[in-house]
Image (cartoon, rainbow, N blue to C red; front, side):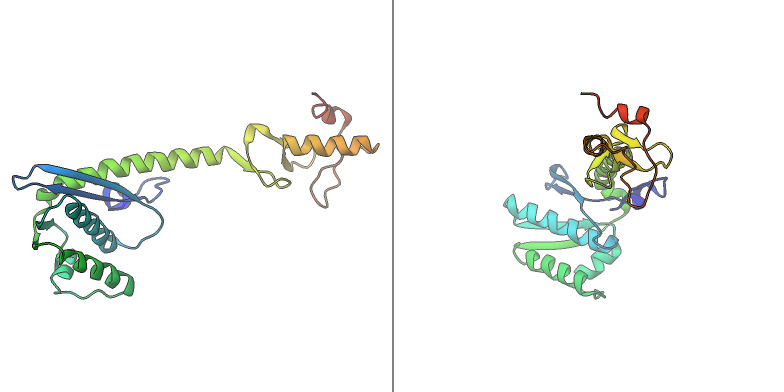
Length: 213
């Protein structure tokens, strides 16, 4: 399930996706919950559904469960698992073949198409996990926006440590500017902007901040 499936369009939605699976006992009690973020672009909903199913089947095998019923409200997954529909792409076909191979390891493995209300618990797992992933993605983006790459050392630097050269506005990290100014002054030269082709000279006053210990 992707963030757009769950929460719809939103400003700066990072478009994250998660796999959410619940392994339940005979009475419907939850034995195991799986909430797993998906890295990078993996495809559409069908691909995510198959990946989630694989996670669930692997988990059931790991618990020593021999008989399972796959419950889904997604008809394409149901029909592909029964062979009613055929996958259109090689990647999806390979994933489905992997799932079908795992199904054979169970003594009994059936699939049932149900109403969305019957899998609401898993949908909530996905919603909760996606909310967490979106918050993390937006926080990471916010941190990245507060950093700038110095064109001299190519390091991502906090914007509070970036210096804008007066007169031309070219930006460099304070450490590189300090080294640049120090070298020029040692050679008896008035420092200029380090940007290639820029002829803006630093003023004496403007250079003083780089001479402080």
